[in-house]
Each structure stands twice: as C-alpha cells, then as structure tokens.
Length: 179
Image 1 (cartoon, rainbow, N blue to C red):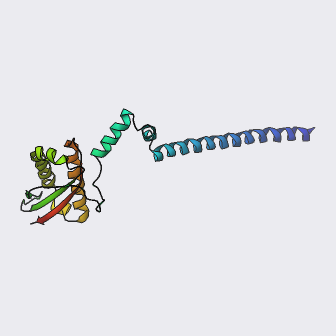
Image 2: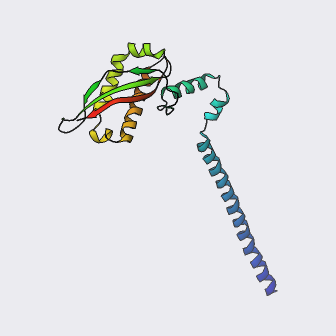
Image 3: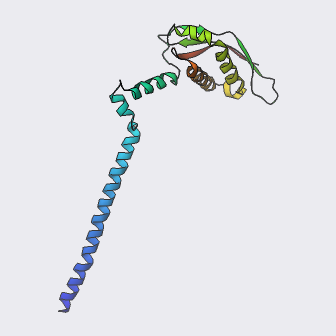
C-alpha cells in the first residue's frame, strides 16, 4: 500500500513538469513566429509592396514623384544628360578666424533639357541655396572626397525640392579652390 501511494505521488509530480515543458515549447514557437513576421515586415519594407503592386494608384504616383525629387545624385557617368553651367561662386567658409574662402564653379546635369528654362527662372534661388550650403561648411567638411560628395548630395537634394519640371541628376565641380 505504501508503495502504491509513492507511485501515485511520483506520477502527480511528473504530469505538471510535462505540462510546463509543453507550455514553454509552445510559447517559444509563438515568439519565434512573431519575431520572424516582424523581421520580414521590416526587411520587405512594410506597406511599400502594396503601393508597388498597383503602379497607377495615386499613392504610387506620389511615391514615384517623391523618389524622383529626393533621389541621390546619379552615378551613371556613361550617359550624361544635358548640362547647365553656373557662374563662379566665391564664398566664405565657416571658420573661427573667418579667413578661409572657397572659389568654386559647377555644372548641373539635368534630367531633361526642358528643365533649363526653369533653372534660368529660378537662378537667384538656386544661387542662394548654393551659397548658404557652401558657407555653412568648414574647411575640414569639404577637404576630403567624401566631404565633397556629401556637399553635392545636399545641394542636389535642396535644388530638387524647388524644381517642378524635372530634377537635377548630378552636380560636377569644374573649379574648386580653397584658401
């Protein structure tokens, strides 16, 4: 009789342990599935696939036009588009002594030749954007190739924000002197 009671006690203690392991395994599987789903959502970009599936939707058109305006500079140097030259700029660089200046000439690569008339019309605004962007930089900011590339990206993005007939694909320095 005593042996029977000890066997019943052992069975009672084994059952809760088995149930607890089963619950832990199920919880772990649920967490893995949720984590995998969240990772897939962030990796695939969330709602962007829904917009891409219907390219004629107004939302897709808005996304396309936003990408066009805020796109990075073009790296395609084999097929260069129409060029728009700017006059020379002489700008004081940001420095404690105020003794550094930048003399620069540049050309813009346009997405379409028709954009040149809008660039002519907004030339004063474009020059202001360039002057303010360049004068906010220190010598250290623009002395490296990466610094010059960041400056190009910044100017192209700001100019594309004000254009409506097309966009600037790239900006090229034709003269760059710092003193």
